[in-house]
Amino acid sequence: MLSPLLIAVALVAQSPPAGTADATADQIRALVRELDAPQRAARDDAERRLLELGRAALPHLANLPVGASAEVALRVNRVRATIYREQAASNRAGSRVTLDVKDAALQQVLEDLEKQTGNKLHDFRRQFGQQAGDVRVTLQLDDAPFWQAVDELCAATGLEIYHFAGHDGLALVAATAALPLDAGAKKPVVYAGAFRLEARRLVASRDASGAAPGELQIVWDTAWEPRLKPLFFTVCAARLSAVDDVGMKLAARNPELVVELPPQGKACRVEMSAAYNLPPERKAQKLAELKGEIDVLLPAELHTFRFAELDRGDAREERAGAVSVTLERVRASDGTVAVPVRIKYDNAANALESHRAWFYKNPAYLESADGVRTEPGSIELLRQSQNELTLNLIFAPEGDWRGQTLVYGTPADIVVLPIEFAFRDLPLP
Image (cartoon, rainbow, N blue to C red; front, side):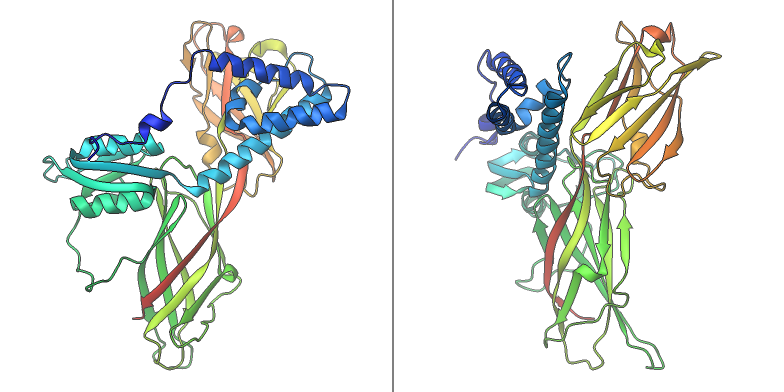
């Protein structure tokens, strides 16, 4: 039996050999220079090699070289955009967990899970008013999906996830009393990469007059790994289908319905539903299958833009991946500084609509030469369109604002990805 420490951390958390970072930086600088080579084949080869370096190349591609040509700018931005998009798509695939622990402390296991996946888990029993005695864990997992690992941990310890603790990550509490499942029955859970879907209830209702078809409402939860920060989910009735156990396809109550569901606070779960007409006769005993796709709008990695010399009086644009940020003319008056920032995406995929609020949470601050940060006292929405918006950041900095730097972070891309799922053999009410 291996030690209680996770066996995979040593494989993924080893320090790189000395000089690797410098070698990578030198290699990338050389490849960027090749992007301006006279021969197109050489330029194409350099771009391909940068793409092969993947995420490791991003820190060294954050800023274009001084005096970079239009060709270099085009290719560097294309490389960054591709890497960011691939990163967002890989996040959907989900984290994997390898554990081999025997009689290990719960806190140690939670820390091991965070090291392997980047997902924070909190023992929240004390905050919940529950007895928070030591829990020992014996668990063996070999390259298991994160959500399967969490479910097996909960089953082994008598704990459950509480999604509304107001913390980043998942909170664990003692499981509440629940009706036992039938012998051999399993929770109606589907693992879909970084997402966990669980059917919660099926509700049937019929009109007392019998004049209208009865309704079957199916409700399920969709949870995601805490390391992800989805902007919202979209459920389209036309992309879902339901069949009962006698082979009848159920008709959607509103086949044109499209519902958008944003995350609430720091919770890593949203409730979804679909409604169908009940079959006219009660022959079916189960919903044989509810399947389809839902869309999730995922941000790529946050990119940090820095603008110095705030009193230059001109507009300056910087680009990373599929987003550009433009610092417009800064104005100072009565101890406050108004800093207009325009954010534009190549394709924002409805993420910038007026009812969205995620962009107000983007990190933004003024930074003085000695590292003192000033957060904006307020943020105004000046302009907004499908793919861009302008925010006015209002600061009240100490000292001379003209010697400070604006630091602004926003996702380098916004990607719409489908989540495929299928619930099977759900008992009809």
